[in-house]
Image 1 (tube, rainbow, N blue to C red):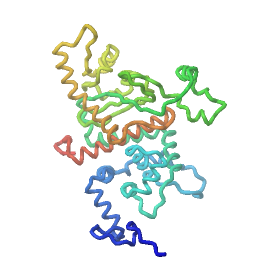
Image 2 (cartoon, one colour; image 1 turned 90 degrees about the vertical axis):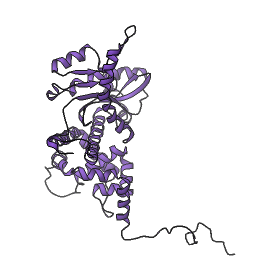
Image 3 (cartoon, rainbow, N blue to C red; image 1 turned 135 degrees about the vertical axis):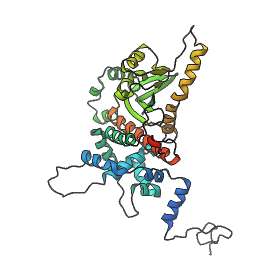
Image 4 (spheres, one colour; image 1 turned 180 degrees about the vertical axis):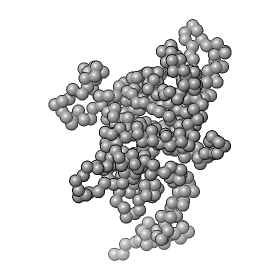
Amino acid sequence: MQIAQSPSSPDSPKPGYKPAGITGWFDTDLTLAKLSGLGNPLEQLGRVVDFEMFRPLLEEKLLNRDKKSNAGCKPYDVVLMFKILLLKRFYHLGDDRAEYQINDRVSFKEFLGLSSGDRVPDARTIWLFQENVVKTHLEEALFGLFNRHLDGLGLFFNEGKIVDASFVEVPRQRNTREENEKIKAGGGAGLWGDRPRKQRLKDVDARWTKKNNQTFYGYKDHAKIDAKSKLIRSYAVTHAAVHDSCGLEPLLEASDKGQDLYADSAYAGAPIAELLEKRGIPGKIIERGVRGKPLDDARKAENHEKSKVRCRGEHVFGFISNSMDGFYTRVIGLGRTRCVVGLVNLVYNLFRHEQIVRLKLLPLPGGAVS
């Protein structure tokens, strides 16, 4: 008996449709050209940032210089691995998804400098590289290195600073009341000693907190932002229960003297006012009324003027939340979270720098335009 050919069979004719399945010599080039026309962010970043600037620091901190011989498997290029960490943060990928996407996406391979025949680092290799970054606190040095590059370009205008904090949420822990009390008292490291596999999955550094009747669990990214360029100048990571104002002092530098410091009402109060006065920093803190003592019209007008600058700090966290899918991370412990947050802040500065250059947003000192 003869079986009728399915209309969906690849051998069946498809009159009236565009031809498909035709392979050409220049398919990859055509795909990249199409992506470029659509606005490939990785291509735009690669035009502006020379990632070779990070090589000396990466090789100094991560390569084993004490090997007795050249035997054994050679490591992947450190700049390649570093760029994979940046991809993870910008696209909010885990190690397994990063391996898959690098194999699958032409734009990722082009950004990493990989061709179709090159081997792609597997998830375990990516995880191990990031662990080495965590152990050496390298994310802080990389962030500082790029900021010195930005400073050399004149992109930190030092005409005012903005401070703000954002939650970094992690998977919520389900502990007993007694376990939580021990963790709060600083004794979390001694819990679950008889169950090492469970102990490795427990985050004893994160904390619970509430804000505007919403409950959060994890950490905070305290950031100081250049008011004009909206670049992150410095940051600090704490657990979530630390009040925003308590994260201010580690962010302050001698160069902040004489610059207006803008912040929301969470930083209001005598302790912060005394700290800023001692450092010679004019405080532009949003004031808030209290029960029975509402703000008068003059102070409301002052708040409005301060908010015009302070709101620029929200643009930073807005980009991280919307374009980078936020700070949420599944890593465990303060050390790994510091690494993730540091890389997130670095990725933001990389893309903000690219945006300033591409759109010619800010004039540089001397009349040049970035």
